Length: 281
Ligand SMILES: [Zn+2]
Image (cartoon, rainbow, N blue to C red):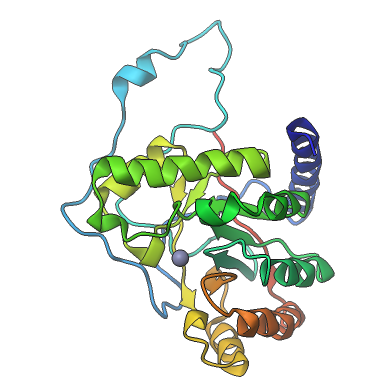
């Protein structure tokens, strides 16, 4: 599939989502804040070193036309450097976000996509570049279905142990493969192991991404049993919660089976399982 066709299909999906959002009365609400987690089970505050200063980049700002030339051409707005990742979503209603990390893996991701499609639900996939490059068709499928693909580095390293240039390379290469296969560059970034530091926040922001962590960790990578994963999602369910699961990195058949059970139950309980939207200004 050609990239421009992919983009057209995605834009159509996004336009549809915007209409739904407005009809629900939440179209103008601020969707995301860095507010504390509603029910923190295992949050991702692993920031080491002094807090980052906001990078205002005054010189870059002055290069933009002040008036008379229209808005500067850019695929996304300047992203401020945060001091900690976003742990939950805000907005009206009982919203929850499902995220799946480390893939895509052709053994498990297609089944997750099928379940999400069955219930007409959008989710987020934080992919690793080394997995994405061999499974570009799955990223296209995510784009077609309106899912959000985020950046989870190329090889899933502990970024806090890497040099700044190595961190940059891990993240930037992954942006490129996502842009190629998904049809647009990612606007969300998640550090492996939730290990953030100043460099990861700065580089993520430089590349136009917001740092997204999670509220509820299913610990599904420990393969605790399908019913335990279901229990963790259902007991952690609350408005604004972001759930962390995995679609790769090991045997994820429990994660696949759990989703089939807890997703319809969340929907029956009145949760709006959705994806966050960045506030484009
Ligand atoms: Zn991961």
